[in-house]
Image 1: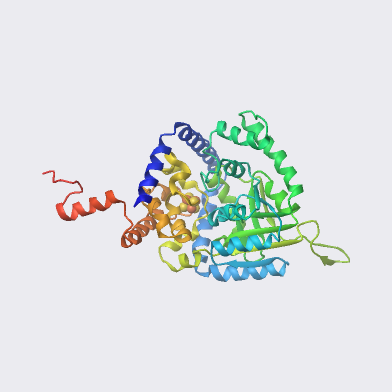
Image 2: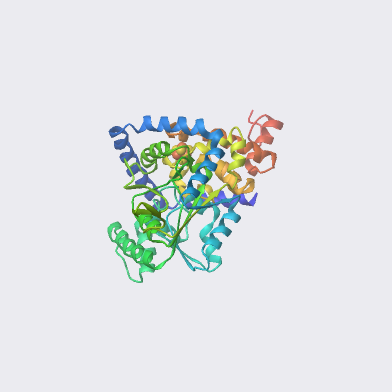
Length: 421
Ligand code: SF4
């Protein structure tokens, strides 16, 4: 029960941080304006509907698609691995580093899920994030504010302080100078560090092509210049074919950031040349080794549950959070320790971190249902939150105030401590 008290006290203190709330309000206003313009310019809602139908229709065959993707990746000369949980995935990455003491990363929610940075740093490996926002959160020691805009609730004053420490000089508090500093830093680092890692936005089962979408181009630097490149992908990232991945690539930028497209939308595969007598030689200019770790970590259990399997349809755009009355006040603190916040995040926290971890988050949701209205995949998050609460109630994991209210209703016919009539 202490966990509830700690969580709710933290939320109240975060809610009183006006600078943080103003940053959330600014980020939300920019997002909404951009998204409104993108929706009016392109047929995004129709693409989202088509993607939704394919995602829902292919869910029961997800494991077949994963198998097909693995075969296609192997055919390209890419090594594939299966991690049943966070521990296995972390151990695999540590092993694949083969003694290298630095790792360059492209922002990855799956790596947040398994606590990869913390795991490696405890073992003496220095991890360098290469996205402007992910690097900022790493420097601040904060958890992501949002699944796709990890630092959007950090005020520029705090950003300047954090980057100045890394730079060893005072940087001005303006976004252009701060991004300019990160640009120089990342372009230097990619020439020094041999191993790179990213998540995957999508993987096409028919070809094994790995789709990555960024606006900053850091993915291109890391996935091309690294000598060894590792991908961690939750199995729900596998889609039946390139057509579906491309549909996804047109939908997610709008719901994730409001922008009509991601500046860098592309695929990664094993580099090869067949320019000399049409003999295929691999690698060409890309990494000499590519490894893809398929992460289960509760997903196959989710698939078996008629209510929670809906969470696997979610594309983790985070669009629902901009409308969430709780997120708009507390940002990423909604979920406590884990990276999956908001109503949809309840299912993800439950299956990836367990019942005790999800309890405070499940009771933070107001069940207002606004998330369902704006979700491009029409994920019924409130239904999943209610089911999570049923499980929690069976385990006795209910906040004391709610437990007393329920008891009062049963005994006195009123949620209050005394009869009012
Ligand atoms: S529930 Fe919907 S809006 Fe929220 S992250 Fe998932 S797909 Fe996006």
